[in-house]
Image 1 (cartoon, rainbow, N blue to C red):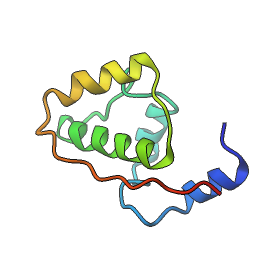
Image 2 (tube, helix red, strand yellow):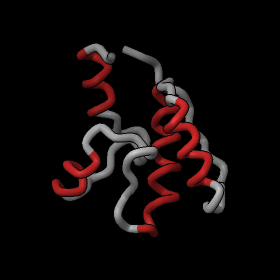
Image 3 (cartoon, rainbow, N blue to C red):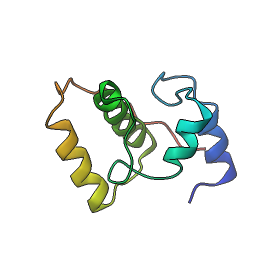
Length: 93
């Protein structure tokens, strides 16, 4: 669980465009706190970018994945072009 300072740092992270993405309220509510094993964007064209951005944010923030999420990421990325992801770690507040 993140501290208040960590949540604030994430919410204000403007150093990487992949940290926060503006979406319609209905899409945000549909996703809630589900990971890729439970939810993917409705537009198939957004799949690879969504996974790439998610992996980047998790890497930058030092977040883990559970086995179901990890398996879903591997399965989904098998159909992507697999571009290199650069994600320098963010220091924690």
